[in-house]
Amino acid sequence: MYTLMIVDDESAILEGISRFLDWKALGFDQIWTAKSSFEVVSHVVDWKPDICLMDVCIGNEYGYELINRLSEMGVRSNYIMMSGYDEFTYACEALRCGALDYLLKPIDGGKLLRRVKQIIVEKLHGTLPEEINEEPDPILKRPYQELSPLIRKIVMIVGMEYGQHISLKSIADRFRMNPTYLGQIFIKETNMKFSEYLMAYRMYVARSRIMDTGDKISEIANEAGYTNMNYFYQHFHNFYGVSPLKMRMGETEENAEREEK
Image (tube, rainbow, N blue to C red; front, side, top):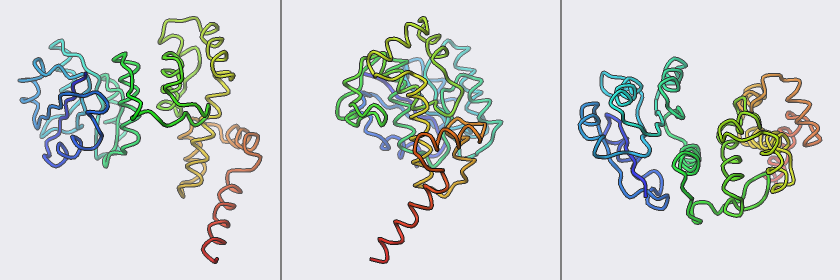
């Protein structure tokens, strides 16, 4: 069982996050809340949080400063920073002090759940209950619980970090494995190369954003991990047989026809 600490100077946020996910089903038997740095420092040694959700601003202090102070005290946890400010400086400071993610308020429940599940599997070396993890992997079309622990960790890393520069070698380095050997294991279990899976997942994310939002194609490409638009258009067209814009226009036309009927 795991312990969770939520740090925010607003009571409504503490209450909301405490009920935001089914923490008990995820394996958390203790949820601690704190409204000040003093309260955290006073109790954190006894609470021993496995995961800590911390606001970037706690009263007149910054959450990343508190994380640094806890590190100096020898306290270790898996930190997720929360913020109502889309400030690049805050995000950089949060990641520099060891936070695993920087989530903007209002918190996206799906993003938070995916990050918490990744921490449970990758950092806490735990397993996920079936009722929390019944959905299939969108690329492999197989339930996550059918995958081996190693492959499950890899696809969860992709699911959280697809927008960043990740490769089979960078993941192999995390697991202290030979990338060639890891690639062979991945192919044997999934019938796909890791590079194929990564591209397919990025295409899946891009298609979902194109169909469900009005965001610019360039913004969607960047979020999906593409800094070169020519590569994005080429991969997207090869994968789906249609350009991103035509796919969006086709969806709009279908919606219009359904509304007219």
